[in-house]
Length: 130
Figure 1 (cartoon, one colour):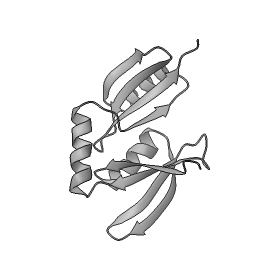
Figure 2 (cartoon, rainbow, N blue to C red):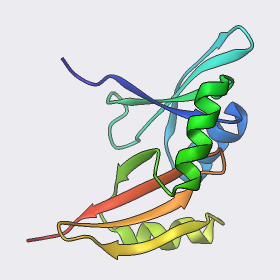
Figure 3 (cartoon, rainbow, N blue to C red):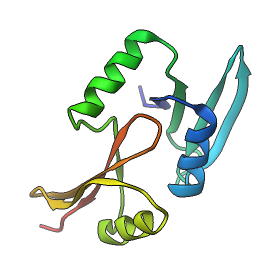
Figure 4 (cartoon, rainbow, N blue to C red):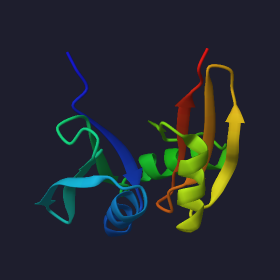
């Protein structure tokens, strides 16, 4: 068994695709019309055949309530790994990304949290050398 696709609820698929590709640097993988929405996935350019991130439309009241609640509690919806967290934070800030947590040493990792503009907080982490 392996993870093939994981999803993140987004309030607007077009806005999410723009943010996740133009700002974060992911690559579009699938964009398939499905009724009023799309099966819309992105992948890391470092592993284009790896795990896909589904930009899932948040049109369900239950998921909308959940998304809003975890956002308000400051809980990230997803975590992405980076090699140099400070460089990535600086790059993202230069592109206008709003950070809720600056790089913070958490023992074996350093973490930072930003707003994806689509209803989610996203955490990035760098593994610290031991």
